[in-house]
Image (tube, rainbow, N blue to C red):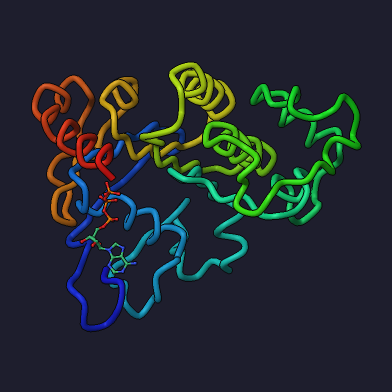
Amino acid sequence: MRYRAGLDHVLNNIDLHIETKEKIGIIGRTGAGKSSLFQAMFRLIDQKSVSGKISIDGFDIKSIPLHHLRSRLSVIPQTPILFAGTLRYNIDPFEQYTDEQCLLALESVQLKHIISNNSEGLHQLVAESGSNFSTGQCQLLCVARAILKQSKILMIDEATANVDQTTDSLIQNVIAEKFKNRTILTIAHRLNTVARSDRIIVMHQGKILDFDVPQNILPKYGHIQHASSDTNNQS
Ligand SMILES: Nc1ncnc2c1ncn2[C@@H]1O[C@H](COP(=O)(O)OP(=O)(O)OP(=O)(O)O)[C@@H](O)[C@H]1O
């Protein structure tokens, strides 16, 4: 895969099979191609620049209508973007769910306290880019959105900054509980995040360097993660 014709390939010879419900960690130095893997799965890249095949449940993602594909996937980005609009719009943009379902989703991510105790609170305004919410709260709102959507696959780009330890643990615990029967792919910048994964993908220069259980990966590649975190902390 490359971002545009004429540019170098950023993903090469990727051959992966992930089982349903597997919890997969993805590690690798900055620029290794971790986020590009997510972009390819969401079909965010011009398909003319992607060769090879990605299948979900046996279906080539190129043959699945885009809205259908994206309804099966949820992403919690490193820096979540909220939209100017109501809280409800941010977790349920297509108004597919009832107020009660939205409130339940907010309750499961322990955010119900940020709104008043009735459905009017769902109409509370979110400022442009979510600037009236902390990064942790923005991530929790993304988790609430994913809980509502009941996506089969959750893709998480772990936040490296601006999320305190308590919020970070809350996010991880809610995800572990609410998505235990789903497939989860986590781009991890800290080793403890992936230590509980079923398997870990190690990426290097657009390729898969290793793919194995944590017990085999962590002793071998711990240094990669430190390099990656250092770089992220500088940015
Ligand atoms: N929109 C883009 N256009 C062109 N090249 C890009 C684009 N996004 C990423 N790249 C290139 O693709 C390669 C892989 O980047 P990617 O963001 O996937 O790495 P990463 O492993 O997620 O890194 P990080 O840990 O820093 O987020 C890099 O060489 C990067 O410069």
